[in-house]
Image (cartoon, one colour):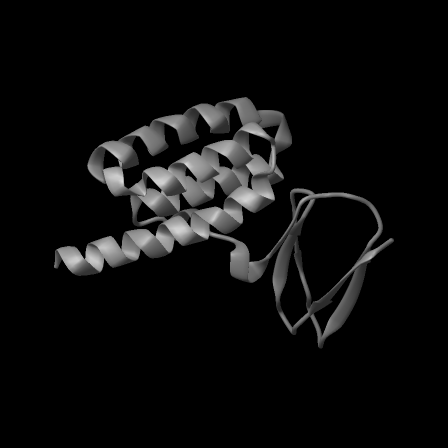
Length: 129
Protein backbone atom coordinates (compact mmCIF):
# COMPACT_ATOMS: atom_id res chain seq x y z
CA UNK A 1 0.00 0.00 0.00
CA UNK A 2 1.32 3.43 -0.95
CA UNK A 3 1.92 6.33 1.41
CA UNK A 4 0.17 9.43 0.06
CA UNK A 5 1.87 12.76 0.80
CA UNK A 6 0.39 16.09 -0.21
CA UNK A 7 2.98 18.85 -0.55
CA UNK A 8 2.26 22.56 -0.38
CA UNK A 9 3.87 24.97 -2.81
CA UNK A 10 7.67 25.06 -2.26
CA UNK A 11 7.46 22.54 0.61
CA UNK A 12 10.49 20.30 1.12
CA UNK A 13 10.84 16.81 2.43
CA UNK A 14 13.50 14.17 2.73
CA UNK A 15 12.79 10.88 1.00
CA UNK A 16 15.37 8.15 1.52
CA UNK A 17 18.14 10.69 2.11
CA UNK A 18 17.27 12.89 -0.89
CA UNK A 19 15.90 16.39 -0.35
CA UNK A 20 12.85 16.93 -2.56
CA UNK A 21 11.24 20.34 -3.09
CA UNK A 22 7.86 20.95 -4.64
CA UNK A 23 8.41 23.62 -7.26
CA UNK A 24 4.84 24.44 -8.14
CA UNK A 25 1.40 24.35 -6.67
CA UNK A 26 0.21 21.61 -4.37
CA UNK A 27 1.48 18.19 -5.37
CA UNK A 28 0.54 14.67 -4.35
CA UNK A 29 3.25 12.03 -4.09
CA UNK A 30 2.79 8.33 -3.59
CA UNK A 31 5.68 6.52 -1.90
CA UNK A 32 5.40 2.88 -2.87
CA UNK A 33 8.15 1.34 -0.79
CA UNK A 34 9.52 1.72 2.72
CA UNK A 35 12.05 4.56 2.99
CA UNK A 36 12.76 7.23 5.61
CA UNK A 37 10.57 10.27 5.02
CA UNK A 38 10.68 13.59 6.88
CA UNK A 39 8.45 16.54 6.10
CA UNK A 40 9.93 20.03 6.23
CA UNK A 41 8.23 20.81 9.56
CA UNK A 42 10.10 17.89 11.15
CA UNK A 43 13.53 18.67 9.67
CA UNK A 44 16.02 20.46 11.88
CA UNK A 45 18.90 22.08 10.04
CA UNK A 46 22.37 22.40 11.53
CA UNK A 47 22.00 26.18 11.71
CA UNK A 48 18.96 25.72 13.97
CA UNK A 49 20.79 23.75 16.64
CA UNK A 50 21.10 26.11 19.58
CA UNK A 51 20.49 23.84 22.57
CA UNK A 52 21.72 20.41 23.73
CA UNK A 53 18.32 18.79 23.19
CA UNK A 54 18.08 20.12 19.65
CA UNK A 55 21.52 18.58 19.06
CA UNK A 56 20.07 15.23 20.22
CA UNK A 57 17.11 15.65 17.85
CA UNK A 58 19.47 16.40 14.96
CA UNK A 59 21.59 13.33 15.75
CA UNK A 60 18.51 11.08 15.82
CA UNK A 61 17.37 12.67 12.56
CA UNK A 62 20.69 11.61 11.03
CA UNK A 63 20.19 8.07 12.36
CA UNK A 64 16.83 8.00 10.59
CA UNK A 65 17.97 9.28 7.19
CA UNK A 66 21.58 8.02 7.00
CA UNK A 67 21.44 4.33 7.91
CA UNK A 68 25.01 3.42 6.88
CA UNK A 69 26.41 5.76 9.54
CA UNK A 70 24.08 4.85 12.41
CA UNK A 71 26.89 3.48 14.64
CA UNK A 72 28.65 6.87 14.55
CA UNK A 73 25.42 8.69 15.35
CA UNK A 74 24.55 6.32 18.19
CA UNK A 75 27.94 7.01 19.75
CA UNK A 76 27.43 10.77 19.40
CA UNK A 77 23.90 10.48 20.81
CA UNK A 78 25.14 8.53 23.84
CA UNK A 79 27.65 11.26 24.64
CA UNK A 80 25.07 14.00 24.15
CA UNK A 81 22.48 12.22 26.30
CA UNK A 82 25.02 11.70 29.09
CA UNK A 83 25.83 15.42 29.07
CA UNK A 84 22.15 16.34 29.23
CA UNK A 85 21.54 13.94 32.11
CA UNK A 86 24.49 15.38 33.99
CA UNK A 87 23.25 18.95 33.53
CA UNK A 88 19.55 18.18 34.03
CA UNK A 89 18.86 14.89 35.85
CA UNK A 90 15.11 15.55 35.54
CA UNK A 91 15.38 14.60 31.85
CA UNK A 92 16.03 10.96 32.78
CA UNK A 93 12.55 9.71 31.76
CA UNK A 94 12.84 11.34 28.34
CA UNK A 95 16.35 10.00 27.78
CA UNK A 96 15.34 6.48 28.86
CA UNK A 97 12.43 6.51 26.40
CA UNK A 98 14.74 7.71 23.63
CA UNK A 99 17.28 5.00 24.50
CA UNK A 100 14.60 2.30 24.19
CA UNK A 101 13.52 3.49 20.73
CA UNK A 102 17.08 3.91 19.49
CA UNK A 103 18.15 0.47 20.74
CA UNK A 104 15.14 -1.00 18.90
CA UNK A 105 16.03 0.89 15.72
CA UNK A 106 12.80 2.92 15.84
CA UNK A 107 14.38 6.24 14.89
CA UNK A 108 11.22 7.91 13.65
CA UNK A 109 9.49 7.21 16.97
CA UNK A 110 12.61 8.49 18.75
CA UNK A 111 12.33 11.73 16.75
CA UNK A 112 8.78 12.22 17.98
CA UNK A 113 9.93 11.70 21.57
CA UNK A 114 12.88 14.04 21.07
CA UNK A 115 10.37 16.82 20.31
CA UNK A 116 8.99 16.30 23.81
CA UNK A 117 12.50 16.55 25.21
CA UNK A 118 13.00 19.86 23.39
CA UNK A 119 9.73 21.19 24.82
CA UNK A 120 10.81 20.13 28.32
CA UNK A 121 14.17 21.82 27.80
CA UNK A 122 12.40 25.03 26.77
CA UNK A 123 10.37 24.92 30.00
CA UNK A 124 13.53 24.37 32.06
CA UNK A 125 15.26 27.29 30.36
CA UNK A 126 12.22 29.53 30.74
CA UNK A 127 12.03 28.77 34.48
CA UNK A 128 15.76 29.32 34.93
CA UNK A 129 15.50 32.94 33.72
